Amino acid sequence: MTIGDHLDALYRLPAYTFPGPDAATGDLPEAEAFAWRVTSDVYDADEEWTQAFARFCAAVDTTRVRALIVGAWQEAYDSEPTAVVEALVAARERFPALRALFVGDMVMEECEISWINQTDLTPLLAAYPELEEFGVRGGSGLRFPALKHGALRRLTIESGGLPAEVVRGIGASDLPALEHLDLWLGTPDYGGDSEVADLEPILSGARLPRLRHLALRNSEMQDAVAAAVASAPVVARLEVLDLSMGVLTDEGGAALLAGQPLTHLKKLDLHHHYLSEALTDRIRRTVETEGVEVDLDRDDADEDQDDDGTVWRYVAVGE
Image (tube, rainbow, N blue to C red; front, side):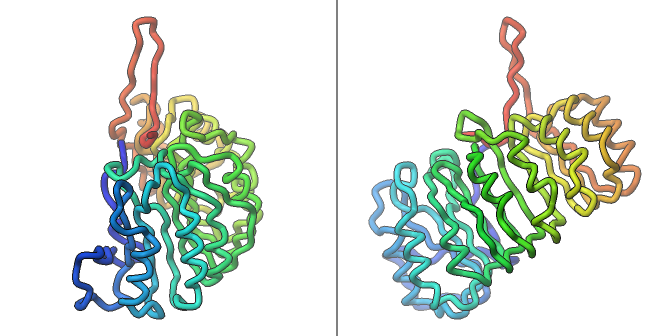
């Protein structure tokens, strides 16, 4: 699977793309009614992202903007968004109502997820202390040194390979308001070099007292993640546990069932898996019969087998 669609909403607001340089901007919608996408072109851009952002700031009452989506920037496959970060930080006084920010809303035709170059984005969280939702697409070059942010409720990082340094930085951060954490761990082929031990601060929940939705997904080590989750202290207070999109086999599924009860959950999401029919039946009997919503859709998780018997399994989103 690849990313084929742009975000259609952010902060419960429908997404609206700010018009390009050749389009009229005289009849724009209300500033607070939409999540505004400001975008350029990756290839042969006629306008740099910072120029598009300057036009946006001139045309829209930014004091009323509540959600902002950073789309493509020029040569995102080769250039980190340093200028984007600097422009957003410099404009912080113009966005007093901003509560949600997503950086890197690109689809495969613009830039494959693992080609998107990122950078240290934590200056954005420092510049916007009232931000409640923060999302990122792309893990290459991404950095996330430990920080403290008192308002952030939702953190999402989508990647084909999330660096261990980022996982450790999130685990070491103080995020007392965080309710929803979604990490696409990815594969070593695309920079996903974290290990289960790197997740321990997250799984302990010590710095995440309000966490209710935990997604650790899209990884090759999904069996090991499931085994660690089975005894993780944070699970007892979760409402949603998401281990989807990865290489989850019967080994991980059995470990999950052998661990602490999951019947307190509202939802258990395991879609895109490599579980046997017998194991999926066990999961349904154990948790679904207790009223837990369970997603066990196999999706496109098909195995390939070489002539020598080697079996290949894949995460949902890689390159």
